[in-house]
Length: 68
Image 1: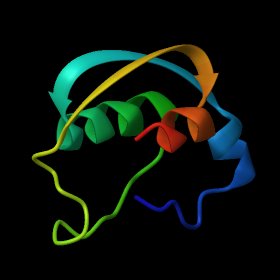
Image 2: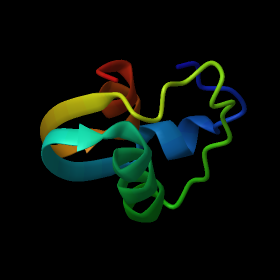
Image 3: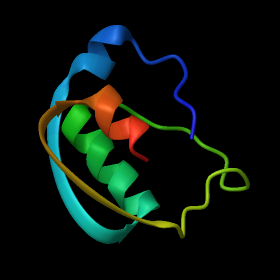
């Protein structure tokens, strides 16, 4: 997944998220809510049925997104 047009301030915002084997589309929804950002992606490119696990406590959004 690529991140475009996010202001540096948004990428530096710290969030906490802990999910295990969750659908990426729900994880992105959760991140949007916590970070106050909106993601736009093409489901032909980003598999929304992919499952991910994340465990971040008070970390910058850029670090969380890098792990996706």
